[in-house]
Length: 163
Image (cartoon, rainbow, N blue to C red; front, side, top):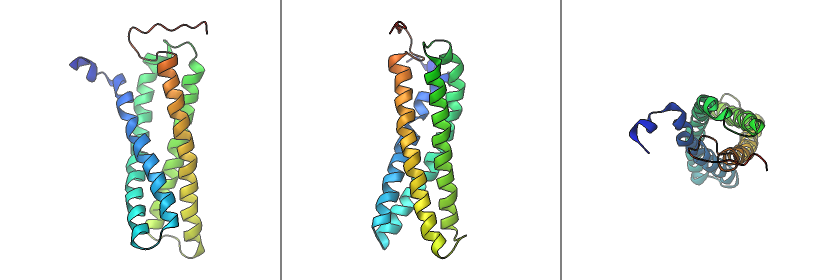
C-alpha cells in the first residue's frame, strides 16, 4: 500500500475494527470466568476484563465513526446496500450493549449500589456482554460479506451482481 493510501480516512475502518473484536471478546470471556472463581483470581479477571471492556467500548465507537466515513465510498460500489445498512445497525446495537455494560460495571466499581442489587448488576453486565458478543459476531459476518462477497472498497475487484 502506498503511503498516501494510509492517510486516506476511509482506509481507517478496516484498521480500527480489529481492536473492539479482540478486546470485547476477551473481556466477555474474562467476565464469565470471573463469575465462577472467587478471591484474588476473581478480582484479577474482573479488573483485566473491565480494562478490556472500557477500551473495547471506546474502540467500538471509533470503528463506527470510521465506518460512517467509509460508507460513502462503499455504498455506491456494492450490489446489495441492505447488507451495509444491516452491518451499520448491528454495529450500533453492539456498541450500545457494551457501553451499557461499561456503565453498569462502573457503577459496581464505585459501589453506587449495595446489597442484592450488586449480584444482580454483575449478572446484568455479563448478560449485556454476551448479547454484545453475539452482535459482534454478526457485525463481523456482515462486514466480511461486504468485503468478500461484494468487494466493498476493494480495488480492481469485479463483482458478479447476477448471483
